[in-house]
Image (cartoon, rainbow, N blue to C red):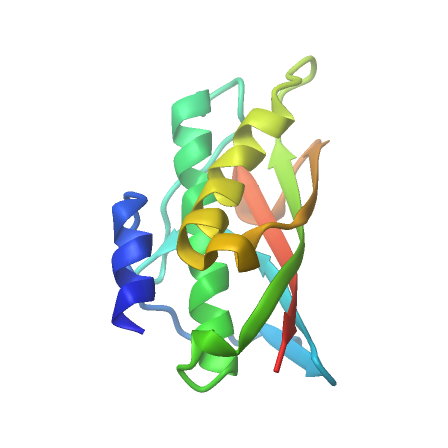
Length: 154
């Protein structure tokens, strides 16, 4: 796994230290060979790293970092679900990127690229994925970005 950590850190993101939240749903759910990852927010060491709307309090650079943090948190939970063996990832199938943006903001795809680039860097060809990046009027805790994922695993 150290190579995955190194690849993540080369993207400018540290390996997360997360704890399962006390919520009525799980961070991941595996059904057969499909692993669903609940929406991840830009959280670092148990704290929300960024709050606000993209195009308002949050500029594109900060929003890109939010997307990178969300991607790192997804990778962390996948690693936990696969008992520390990210080699079991066959393919990242889909990312859905939600962006809390001010009216008129339209660079959703640009923000989504922050997460896509991390996944491609960490997983190589196995990180190539389908994707949606959409704007929202708001997100939980007023975070700028939330991302969910679907993986095919063995």
